[in-house]
Length: 381
Image (cartoon, rainbow, N blue to C red):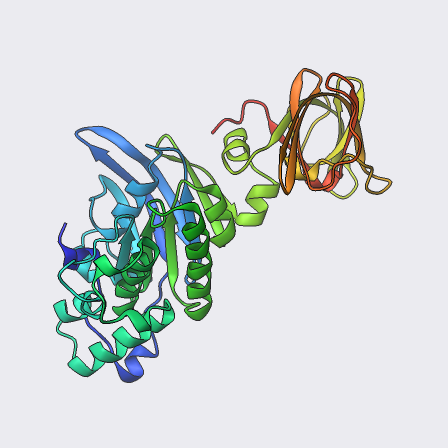
């Protein structure tokens, strides 16, 4: 892969009035598959990324998320299907004609070039006017907070600063779409948190920029993304707005992969309760959860996040269920509890810890119906 392809730019560098009206930047996967030596690694993927949206592609190793990103970049060719950016079918276009820029985890900065020269590389490769290059470099470094480091070499920067320069180089070519392939995985935890904030600020400054963000870190996805696509075994397992996907996961894999989830086996008692809720039974306990289209007698998993389980009743409609306290783990600001409910572990994360029974003692747990949803037991993909 050439460096010029990596920092890809539009086929034509625009200025003036043309630059004020950028091409549409929505991305459409139309039944895209990718195969290596006859082995399908990306199954038919149909997915729409709206213009100006941050979409996080997450999933375990080998799930197909990076393959999907590389297919958009033009570094792998689909075996079938189409990739459309704006109104242009880019499936057969080389990377440098797609109007994209990509940032990878190892920065890929040129060690013999100063910061400003690295940022200018893509523009120089496209023959942009010298005055435009200077303006774009200054503006891109300002956006990522690195203007004062323009004369330094990469070796004189920290890892987080180098990654900012890599992002500035990508922005300098004014891409329609920015591809981020686990850009923070090589950084330590504190710098990663800072960089997540920087990327969020970047999108506020450039709201028209579409970002596809591949990460294995669920917290990054939850913090940054407007929508999340969860990949599994080369296929799309779940996709939707970040908050909806977290609060109402459509299947077990999504519930367990996108943060921790308590999954309690229940049987639907009464379907079609008012307001999109149903009654379900866990052992001898009747509970209420958000759900639609359920039938009485159906076996389901009740999903509730650990931070939504409390040790005190919150309101009259609150679900209450008895458990046996098994474990207590104090972690400074948070305390993690593990309790047993009908032979199923129920995790609780709390900031306020009232007096607890001894391990093995009874502990009443509470959660709001709106914080619980139902998942089919066999909905694993």
